[in-house]
Amino acid sequence: MEISLRNQVAIVTGASSGIGTGIAKSLASSGATVIVNHSSERSLNDAKTIVREIIDAGGKGITYQCDVSKEDQVVKMFQDVVAEFGTVDILINNAGIQKDAKFTEMTLDQWNAVIGVNLTGQFLCAREAIKEFLRRGIDPSRSVACGKIIHVSSVHEVIPWAGHANYAASKGAIRMLMQTLAQEYGADKIRVNSICPGAIQTPINTNAWNTQEAMNSLLALIPYNRIGQPQDIGNLAVFLASDASDYITGASIFIDGGMTTFESFSTGG
Ligand code: NAD
Image 1 (cartoon, protein in one colour):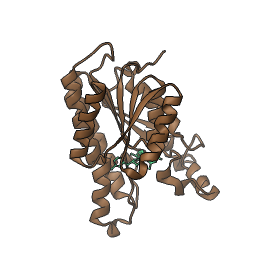
Image 2 (tube, protein in one colour):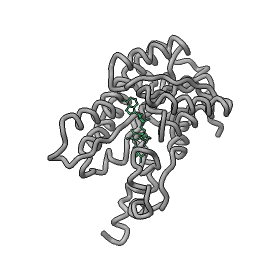
Image 3 (tube, protein in one colour):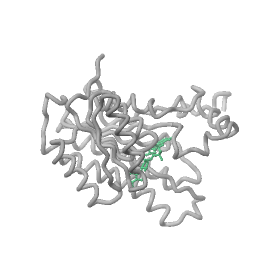
């Protein structure tokens, strides 16, 4: 099975680190032109490095600064990308943050910040993407689908997470956002799916793997007995963005080394 994303334009939000970087590089190596979105001036250098690595490897990409929780910035990002590249074919809704707190101590700012990026950001980007997909229509020289949206959710769309109520609530909501969009726009041949990673080695969860003790407790939750890498997620994103997965829509795909089999029950519960 040969997978190609040639002639297609992909926006990857929060691509200046971690999973977003892995996805951006994987899409670029499959032929897509990749917009490496980063949120602020501080992440510009990281985004530039990633674009340089994409280009050095023979791919195509640019950096684009946009805070996905801000409506005006998201609208402008889609307008600018369409003006420069003609359209958008693939949206990877990846940007996400954590602001952890015991529930009774969680501030409204912590709640709003996480919902703002993880959920409202995914809503705003999906809305602009779908408007552009519908404007362009199906172009068989690009894809048999009119457009593809991949939400980066989490195993925490089904596993409750004490001390992270804002994060878990945002990921649970992404499931219904994703399925509703898949239902609403299926007839338009727009495919919408979620990737639900388990533990992937990135800056968001450094405390979970940066000491041997932390790594051992983490591995106790993962039957496959290794932490995931951004490349693992990149491989799945390429498949879901490609015509090879054309009959998949409205699905949450867990990529977690078996974490959602609930390892703690392996000895009988
Ligand atoms: P990360 O911290 O390395 O990456 C998050 C990215 O989002 C960063 O590049 C950050 O700059 C960007 N970002 C934050 N706020 C933004 C905003 N307002 N606008 C645009 N970009 C913004 O962490 P990661 O692990 O790569 O996380 C990526 C996604 O994967 C998140 O949605 C996260 O919830 C999800 N996820 C991660 C794991 C894991 O184990 N690492 C597991 C499940 C789900």
